[in-house]
Length: 139
Image (tube, rainbow, N blue to C red; front, side):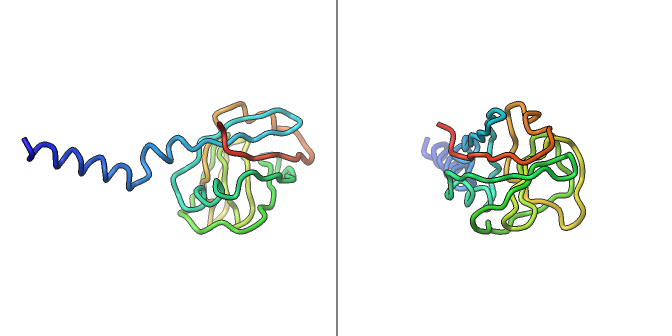
């Protein structure tokens, strides 16, 4: 019987060490005068660092009628980048530029670090102008 218990406990340890269930449940709440949305954070160093610096208030500008962008108080660590994004992607352009995409698209190289995905109606940000958001850990 011990031959069966060892692989099972090894699988549990491997899952936990990879950030499995613990990070998969990391959610944030993004609130503004326009409404609020929740987002599931990605499992990477940048998203972990963002979570550690919450709560934050960020003034965001509209950029290219596809995204809201704002500056974080300090840089986040590097993580893998991608060029494509979809509606609701939370990203990091440079190490300190937080982005909420409300349209699908693609960015030029080197791409964005994916921080997470909005699970609510991100269309609240689909309007011109500045918006101030509060980002905090969801309870």
